[in-house]
Image (tube, rainbow, N blue to C red; front, side, top):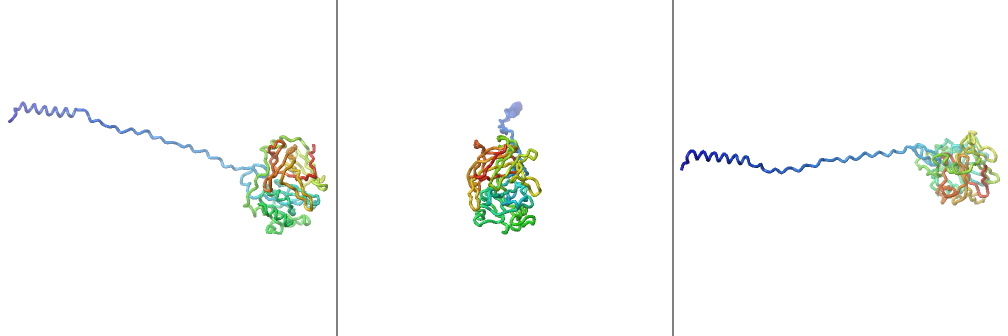
Length: 347
């Protein structure tokens, strides 16, 4: 059946309206993407580099020096102190000197160089039974002219290299024509030390104050002109403080003790240790143990105690309260005075 034209028009309008109504309906719901959190970057601060030390404390003097100077071994030597051996070569440039009683009532030195090694040192003499206890803590090298087999074996038992005149290290030694034998064996010190440059530097032997006025004797000691020492009837020693020199000046048997240049030997610190001595054909100082002593620095002297627990341990110095004793930076002489001898503080 065909619809009338009016009805067809009405249906067309209705269809268009339906389409329009659908197009005008609510839009489909959109799910929003989650919002990303803002990114954060952790900045790690660059650490401040620790400065590399360029200086250190010279182990046998207490002075502040460039680190590249604290290398190589200590060089010790058994130095003759017979009157025919004086003046010796190189004593004025030592770091530490030990004086010990030997046969005949005279003395010899165990001298140690590290900070300032001269070209030549001497004259050297033979080893003695107390020397291992002196040099054990230093390691390094000891130069000597010989000695009895048992005494040399005692050195070989240490960690110290024995450089003996007449042995393989004899190439670093010679006899001087300036003195007569046996007081004329000289060591080419720099050359010998260079031959063993890979050996380790010595450990620090004494404690040092940061300033000379803070050293134990200078700070807490009593004012004194110096010391008079007696090793035996044949060996009298004296040290006198010189304000002008800023050091203690040394004398032997009433005469100035001078170096090879004619300058009086001197020390920043003078340490005396009263020691037991086994007397016999060859006297032997007993350095392992303990006892009393003195330390002199800057024109003042302090009474102390000393101890050494074994051959390779350093000597420990303490005051009357048991506190460590400090020295002033500089060279030191250690006087191993027998109990039969004496140490007098000169006021």
